[in-house]
Image (cartoon, rainbow, N blue to C red; front, side, top):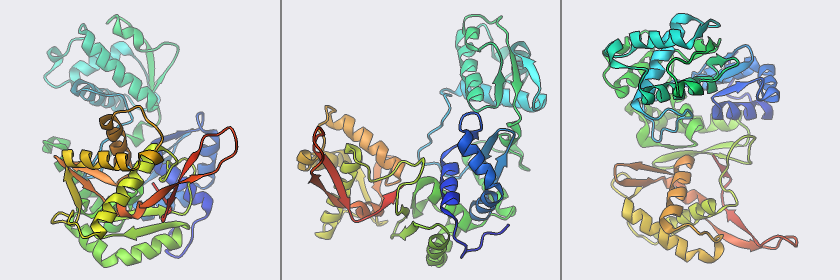
Amino acid sequence: MQVSNAEALTEEIQTLVFLLWSKEWIYREHKPELYFRIRSHEHKLKAVFRDWFHYPIYMGDGYVRLIKRPERRVLDPNPTHSLKYQMDFVLYACVLAFMEEKGEDQQFVLRELLESIKAYYPGGSDAISWSDHGVRTSLIRVIKTLEQERLLLMFDRTIDQFRDSEDYDLLMQVSNGLRHVIRQTRVSLSEFSNMISLREAFHQEEIEEGMMCEQQIWRRLFAQGCLFLSELSHDEVIYAERHGLRMQQKLEEVFQGVFLERYASTWILVHDKPREGKSVYPAYNTHSHIVTAIGTHLRDRLDRGENWLNHRGYVALHAKDTFDLFVSVRRANQEHLAKSSLSDRALWEEVADYMKQLGLLKVINDEWIFSDALGRVAGEIVEEEVPPKEDVKRELETDQNWLF
């Protein structure tokens, strides 16, 4: 099924597209209503993700998963799992290798897994010892992560007791979702010494499979909401310059109420209303209000002719200058902001994280780069009368819609 450029999607399909982008897995037992909504539009959703993003959707027995292949650049990795240390990731890879060899729906005991990990582990069996409490704790994190991802099924016992005894044993089973996690690829992983070159190889493989520049750009926009053009490859930049207007028109024809705004160095998606399951900006909270105040402050100073732009056309400041900017904005808008017991430093760290999530700020080395789309959120905070028994509510009036 091909999705025509002029074929507008229904509101339900649009909602499900954004929900699938925001969730790693959707399980019937956890979210039955959402699961069946997706299954009822299975063919249309598969067509949308194939044609727009070159991504497959897998509908398994009781689960749905959108497979997001690795991107070449990850600005702010935010893993959903609990893995923390190098040992965790090495053991995670070893366990996945064991599970792939074991096969889906196959059961095994912990003792069998421990012996196999010794065979898979770099450096040989002598390089790892299960008598080491730290190693056992690391494996517990791995097993819990795989259980959380529904790749491993547990029965009447848990892995926690393994922390206190290396002789502990329990029964586990490989789920039928493993096939959608182990990446099928023609490249030999042993040829690559770092993740950057491996991602580039995966990217080239996707191009050979038919992925286009446009699909790569849509991926980043739907994943981040705000796209710095400097993140694109040379070919993608040329494509964006030549076809940006057509892409903008295509999006607005197919996704009703979703708009692409193109600035000198940034593209952003703007929505005409909040959508199910999405965090939105602006929101009625201190972080959102401060972001608006920062955007207004920067735009006003640029309008007055102050040269804040670097040679690439960004507002880019060093960490200290950025913090000083935040403090001055907080002081200037103190009467409009909810009182906070947080110090300037603590509140700024929260606001900075919030801006990174919105895609309005990124940090490279010691350079804090503000998206030129930040001027789009300029506005003012005004007082509004509210019903009795409620505090005065501070609302945000902006000249924009909703950003994700």
